[in-house]
Length: 215
Ligand SMILES: [Mg+2]
Image 1: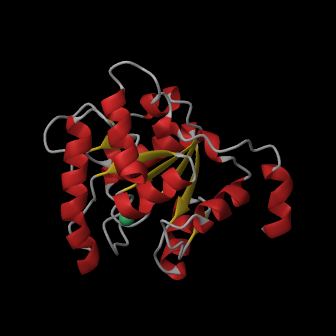
Image 2: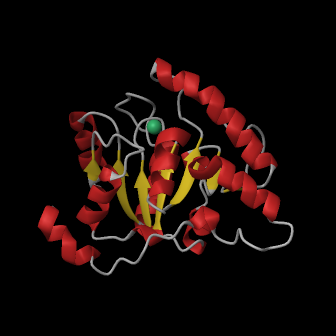
């Protein structure tokens, strides 16, 4: 895609750091601003109790036009070759309204399989939270980061990676508890951080459901 992608991105402005916007000089907002500085890249702009519950109207109203998905435990259970009917229905609704792409840390064969099956461009072995995979998918799609939302189940890969790109970030509860042992340990930290962020009003819920926020 290299040189081909350049003209399409030539019009991209500087990436907007959405989560930091409005944090200066507003009375009553200083405490929130300090916490955002403290947690920085870990703060998702929005969160939802499952991908199928994400309110597409709310996303569109936030100015989002492009959705970049994580694969494992976001669109499908970890390592699975099946997609839940509910998620598939939601995905079809999303496809009618947004341009879609996928960036995954999983192996090429698996990511290509799902990209082809869903009919969306996909980048594998992205090593998120590194930005290379996101840059590659934006180049393929001819998009700028400004109107893109990253949707994923991991704070330390999807949210940090999306925030580093200046894109809107949406954290979802993982579809299954089956995953790498290292990831399972990180979940404890994620849950604690998310509870704190939600309690302080630092991230906004993107679905109408109540109850446990994460995991
Ligand atoms: Mg994942």
